[in-house]
Amino acid sequence: MKSKFGMCVLAAGKGTRLKWDGPKALAPLMGKRLIDYSLSCLTEFASKENIEAMVGVVTGHLKEEVEGHLKSHYTQGNIRFALQEVQRGTADALKAYFEKIKEASSVDYTVVICADTPLIESSDLTLMFNEFKNNPKLDAVCATFSTSNPTGYGRIVRAKGGLGFHIVEEKDADLEIKQINEVNSGLYIFKTAFILKHLNQVSANNKAGEFYLTDLFQDSYAVSALMFASGLKFLGVNTLAQLEEVGGHLRKRIVQKMAEEGVIFVDPGSVYLDAEVKIGRGTTVFPNVYCMGKSSIGENCILEPGVIIKSSTLENGVEILGHSYLEEAIIRQKATIGPFARVRPGSDVGEKSKIGNFVELKKAKLEKGVKVSHLSYVGDAFIGEDTNIGCGFITCNYDGANKHVTQIGKNSFIGSDCQAVAPISIGDNSFVAAGTTITKDVPNDGFAIARAPIAVKEGMAKRFIKKKT
Image (cartoon, rainbow, N blue to C red; front, side, top):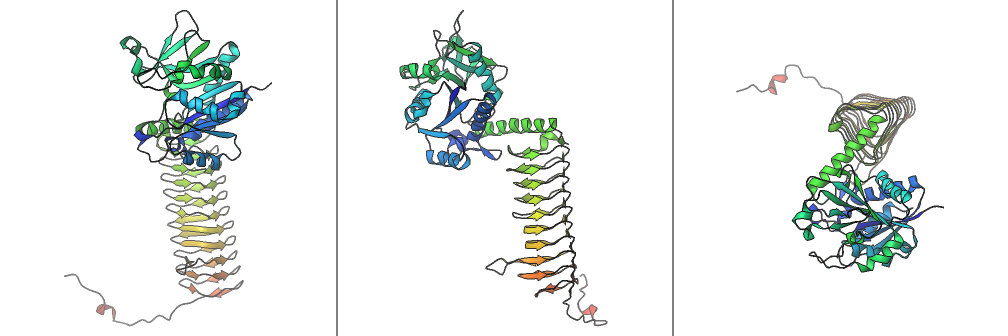
């Protein structure tokens, strides 16, 4: 029989020290929001443990923004919301959770996790849940760790000779208690019946005048303090410095995992990857590469130095040469981009196509084997298979009010320094001579040329050449 879990995410904070105008839970981190990491951890834990889970998020500051984000990004999820009207401590937040989410009281276990601890992994929750499996009489498990600088943390005071313990918060600790190095992480699993029995007994009789959830841990209770080897994973985000720090740890974790799966990083510490980026085995990533959003990069690709990729898809064998910029684009297998190319949203570059240096594409569909090698702009265009575009080609797609489409067929040749004034159509197997401005359609097998007669005046150059003074 599956265990039923309630997952309580504490997300009511303001994030004042983050210097962030929005709610703390929505602070940006590697292409996601802080709360997304806690939710991913819970979802993975439920899947791995084969448990039935209900997620409840306790909101407060700018609750509409938090709820809006979760409703738009977790449309298939099972997320409930509970508003903590006034922030009076973690126990008060948990009270709001049980009072406003009816299903919360009917589950076997309740996990309490903060929305600002993105380094916690599902395996950590599994270790805590194993405590219950090994000792069915347990009522609660608190994750703890030891630190050389415990200032600010609640201290774990273990009962002598017993299973229980209690937690003393920093403001209430005397000098002896402050010497304790084992501290509270803020991550808990409770038997739900235990919470319901004791939660209303928690008082605000402390120096902060708050209702502490930590008061549910007492020497006489069947509670366990599970010490983890490192406190790094419990690092909370309260400042921009901490946001940067956890981001660094997350990126390192992602790079290490990819390296184990066969991705080659020339200088792992110089690469920036968002949390949802995927890279296939055999791909080589050079220094100073940025991959953001939900970018997907195939196998055996090459990303040279300075490449920026945003929310794009690269198929197998693609080469992105130095300092190229791709955004919301699709690059088909064995295509080459760059160096110094820009591929803008809506572009689809065909298999074995070549986009060269200082070429810009925007909403352009290129079929297999197309070459746009030098100094060109192709926007709102369709180019057929094996067509070759010469240097300095421009699609004149904008008339000052509306965009228009340029269509070029397959196996055609466009000479250097040509302009296609859209809307325009150039057929298959066509040839456009260099220097031509195309203002009317060119049929299949057509030849187009538009040049003014050249006038050469012998001896006249001296009238225009200025001598240095």
